[in-house]
Length: 84
Image (tube, rainbow, N blue to C red; front, side, top):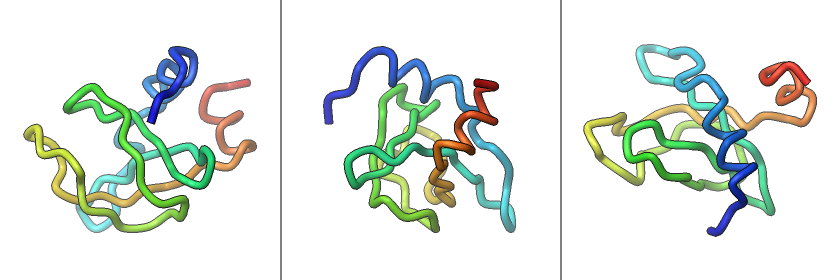
């Protein structure tokens, strides 16, 4: 998936992990064209999953998380996260 620099910078600005649920990190993501995208602080790339929030298995294993919960932000959530 090719994304703009602006979107990549927005994804990088989201706090990761946002929190933990039962010891598993909660990662913030944006819905984009039917998929959820987020910035991986471990491999420094954008990752994508299905568009629903929920438990996921990591696509990369750069000494990061092997699994996490994905929290897909609505536009209102995003405005709060980045203080728009």
